[in-house]
Image 1 (cartoon, rainbow, N blue to C red):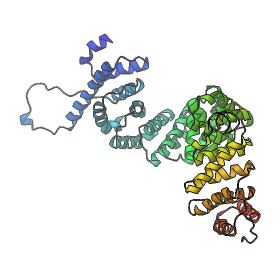
Image 2: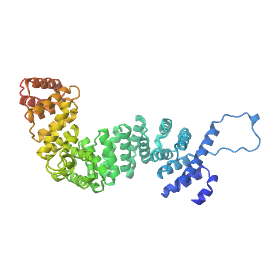
Image 3: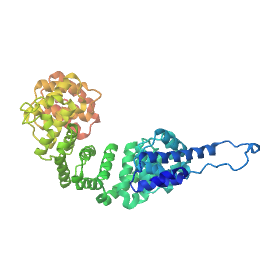
Length: 492
């Protein structure tokens, strides 16, 4: 690097970029000072070139005699290589220098090839630098004019990078690129990486991928599943769950089989994200695959904070999967203290530190996984629901989960407790969805609730309003529950 520094002043933008590019390719950092000097050289040439191109024409009569130094032309490749190299080396120059470079580059993007343009945005993403809306708009214009030259890798890298810098590409532009990628077989052997980046970018930007692209992913995932890495599986699951867009059964099975194959490489973050995504997508892996994923959960139990263990527990409940009573006890130890119950040893007030939502998720997870928790622990969880309901702070969703879980566990709750929970549900006039109300009424009936005539009348009135918006099977379940509570007049 001493030779480079000695000749730095005489290098043009292409030479400077070549040095940075070579260092990046060799995975060698020449030092922050030298990279800053190289960046400053590119900035000077870009600024001089911009000023030269924008200067007004001068009167020939006033033109000085002799040779005048002409500003060096900065080629797109030089800019692309330089910014890409800075990003690859994870070196971020000063914001002033970057702002100057991207301000000068934006108007030139129309002359950049697809890979050159992509590398500029990719470099910004790796530097965690957001160039701003004006630059983003120039990117969109350049892509529109040149979209046919984008292939699978350029498309996936560009969309991923745009999402990373906080840009939201126009829907039509994303659709154009993704439809073209689908027609190109998603990039062939690179399809696993390409589709994971594209799906992640769509979810991050809040843009739904076009149907043709989703169909292509459906067909490709079973073929490329054995090439998926932990990062790819993580990105795809997170993206699908965030968009609420599960794939076909075959594609989802291939994806979860890939997750199972990689279970021994899962870290705590991926474990939690995998469970969260599978629960959001309501996709239950095949028994063998689930067992491998559970093995990772068993291995990582001690590495998860309490909130993450609760997320995993909730997912097991949603998926109706019992990973083993020993695993459940390990995941819930902090919520019930040590020992067999909340009042024996350990932390006697562990449940009191939970909020109603957390208590409800635990109760529901216990019920759905058919795990029988210590009686004192379950009673303490139910009491947390009652306390928040009495205060008027219990979220409707927590009421549904908590009562549902308590009914599945065949718990015994007092009439006073059930009165409070029932009245809380009645008071949630506009916040409680019809199906949620039906579940609450069914759970109250299963718990042996004996309402007062006034409370029963209020439940009937709420149910009558909800009935037209329920599916036939839910209507029948609601009628049956109301009949068990003492009503025989509910209208059909």
